[in-house]
Image (cartoon, rainbow, N blue to C red; front, side):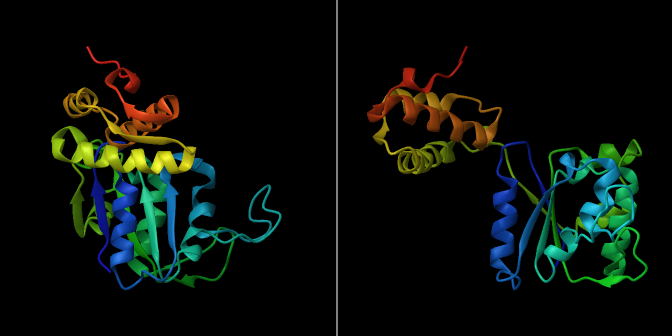
Length: 226
């Protein structure tokens, strides 16, 4: 039940790590609910997390449950938690500390049993120093840290991942590509992958679509390599 903070660059697969953590624990049979903290409008964030009662604000035509309710008994994954507005950080901290929350406009508090896994690509320590992220919330989220390295630091993983994405793409796109040429493999390993695993997946998927069958050559990867 420790809160886990997953740190890594964009595209490294932090949500996949979060899901693996969830599936490996005692809450595996309960919900796994993912929230992109960067896409929630500031004015709706409290409602998104904790829900609201009818008439709580303009447009609240009905009662609505939040993601804390949806994740009850399971795991709530807060992706890019560093993007949360400061005032929402205060509400989140209280909910985590007291294990209870109050829907927007509600009078009664609800007890919650949710395990938090958060992820960020931001330098949280810098954000704390600049007053953009609460240090007490950071310590609450950071009971255990997992660092996900960028793909450029894991060259031995590149070809196995590429083969996996190739097989996956062939099934999804109904293609019959059998593999990569030696030159294509060399290019995949030597590239820096600034977009990490996400960029690799998109590159392989596009190459499978354009090649259709046979072997993917270096030119089929359509990579802008200086």
